[in-house]
Image (cartoon, rainbow, N blue to C red; front, side, top):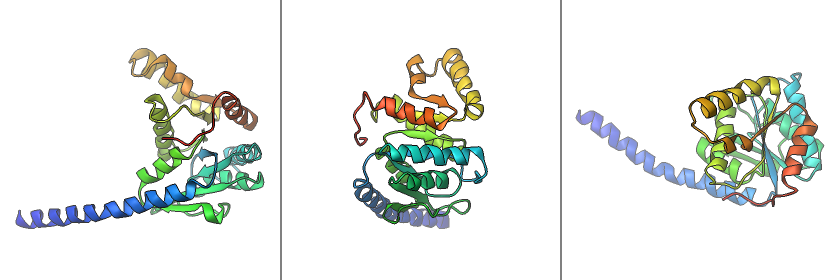
Length: 227
C-alpha cells in the first residue's frame, strides 16, 4: 500500500508540471492563429484515399471557400485533412494544419502553409483552437474523431458558448442515417434536444451547396472570432 501511495504521489506531481505544457500550447495557438483571419474548419477521416469521391469533394469545397476569402483549417494530417489543405492552396487561401501527436495515422501533410503548421499533444487544446478560430464547420465522412469534433461544435452552439456558425455535413449517403436517428430518437422519442437544435446543421451532396450555405449564412451574420 505504501508503494502504491508513493507512486500515486509521483503521478500527481507530474500532473502539476503538465499544466505548463498545456499553457504553452494555448499561448502558441492563440498567438499564431490570431493573425490568420477568417477560416472554415474541414473535418473528415485520415484514412480517406486520394481516389475517393469525398477526398475530391474536400479539395473542391476548400478551393472554392478559399477563393471566397476564407482560410481553411484542418487537423493537418492525411486523408480528408490533406484534401482540405490542398484545396486551400489551390484556391490561394490560408492553409492551416492543427496536428496532433498520435501513434498511428497522423503526420503533417505537404499542403500546409509553413507558418500555419501547429502541433499539439493535447486533444482538448487542439479542439479549443479549432473552434475559436473557425467561422464554420464543413464535415465530411470520418470516424470517431470526426464525430467528436462535429458534436463538440454543435454542443457549443446549442449552449451558446459560441455564436451560431454554419455546420455543413457533406455526403447524404453517409450522414442521412445519423441525422434521421437524431430526429426520430433523440428528438421525437426521447426529447433529449429541442426542435430548434436541428437547425444547427445542414446536409449537402455538392461543393456548390456547401459553399452556398456558408456564404448565405454570412450575408446576415458578422464574421468574428469565437469566445
